[in-house]
Length: 241
Image (cartoon, rainbow, N blue to C red; front, top):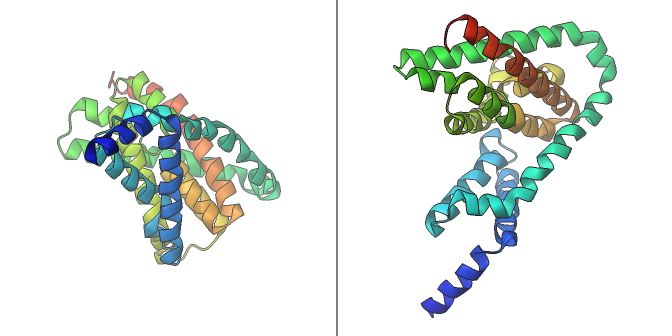
């Protein structure tokens, strides 16, 4: 019986549809858990999905490349989905016009604070210069963070891990921070989520309201652009590379 099952597994593992299906099933299970917990921010579907898939890959001894080759269609959809974020933002155009300066200032200050805190904590804990540089862009979306890390001489693989951790952690605790600080405005909450927790935070924001998701997507994009343009220049002036 076991040899037969092994043969079936070898066949399935070579099929791209296996890992695409596994990704969709993992996310479906995660959303069910999310609903069962009354949409608790701590039961973030993205975080649970990642945990499920990591466990499957570990138990089945499947290389990440094999998984990605099968699930890359989901990765491809990130581009169109990101562009589609412009639609809910367009519907908030009046608020955007009224608050553009505050939003831009928030992105600059928030991005600077995120970079400074990450690098300072890493330095205080005795991290190597390479690790400190890799931590710098942890609060922007993965494609931009990887490009910035390569530009400044860091480790893109370490950056990816920290970006994912930041997004999942930020999306999980943001609700409680907003509640503690008595911040209820969707525009403010959404922009803060996007500026600090990038794509995962934006996904969480859309689960709350379309307005929150729109401004979270805006913050994610603006913060990413500012980080990509200014971080390499600032670090070079400071003599990091």
